[in-house]
Structures are given as structure tokens and as C-alpha cells.
Image (cartoon, rainbow, N blue to C red; front, top):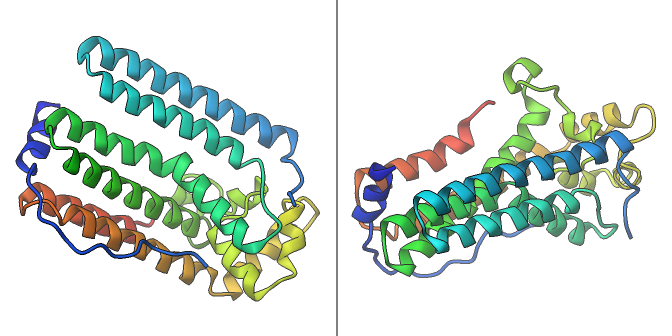
Length: 255
């Protein structure tokens, strides 16, 4: 861990850069089935327990209350993200904003706050803390967007889980939401959470016939570009270059 603190300390100077706008984005759905809802809640409880355990260890071994506060925020976001996953929106624009908020809270918050926590331990400059947070946030959202793409483009062996897994759980991810703009008939399937026989297969075909995969990939690229813009505020170093390379790897992974 000491080496990681040192990496942030070495990068503890920054240069100002012009702000650029972040990546943009283009009633209520029926409830998840009992098994899916139970799985969501179980994941939230398990993840919360694990992070609370980590927080307790961190407090005992590090004694840094700021880091504990950051870990607490991760727990709150994760639980909120799991419950966001239980709902949806009828309006297409609200639906996409809901999806991105869920994506941040379920995935990107952990990465963003982990980056921030490491920077807090290694550097006293709050500007660096914010750079680390924004880098992790954008990389985290991009990571999840690509994960949602791979659910449609990779085989089960590559992913280590069944493909179309999100559809089978009744979840409408980025590729589905973009495809719905070209195939409005998907709206009804989204609102009933792909619960009728044949819904999952039809939705998958609509996605593959649309540019939903391409648009989701493009959105992930925008988030990665924003991550690179943020981390490039730090002075040049091998560690900064590695973080830039990491953001690029997120886009090219196949599992």
C-alpha cells in the first residue's frame, strides 16, 4: 500500500486546464420477479457488509476518518443503486438519466471513491483528491457501459456468465435504451421487464439490428476521454501514463 500512496504523492502537483462539458446522454415499470428482487437485495446486503468490514479494518489500521467517510459514501451509493435497479421510467430521457445514475451508484462510485481514498492517504492537496475522484468516476461509468455492451456481443465463455443476463433479469441497459429509439415497440417490453415468453430473444434481436451497441460504446469513449482529461491535470509521470493506459484498456476489453 505504501507504494500506491507514493504514486499519488509523486503526482501531487497539477496544472490547470480549460473545463469541458462532461459526456451527455441522449410511470414506473413492473416489479422484478421475486427471485431477481431477492438477488438484488442480497447483493446489496453482502456488498454493504464487506465494505463495512473493510471500513472497520481501515479505521483500526489507518485511523483516517476521511477515508472512513469515503467508504461510508460508497455503501450508501451501492444500496441506493440496487434500489434504483428495481425501478424504471416511462419517459425515455428520464429513463436514460435513471440508468446512468444507477450505473454510477452501483459501479462507478466504488471506483471513484477508491481513487479518492488513495489520493487522500498519499497527498494533502484537495485538488488532487477531486482529480482522482473524477478520473475514477468516468472510468467506472465507462467500464459498466462496456460491460453492458459485452452482454450482447460476447459469448458466455468469454464473459463468465450467460449472455443477455441483464435482459433475463428484466434490466434495460444502454444498448437496449438506444435501440428503443429506433424500435419504439421495445417500450412495452421494457416496462414489463421482458417478462413475456419471447421478450428476451426479441429484445436481443432489436438491439443487434440497431446501433445501440455502437452508441453505447461511443458514450463509453466519451467518459474515457473525460477521465484522461482529468488525470492529465497531474504532472507527467509513469504512474499518470499508466492510468491513462488503463482508461484505454477499459474500452478494448472483451470480458
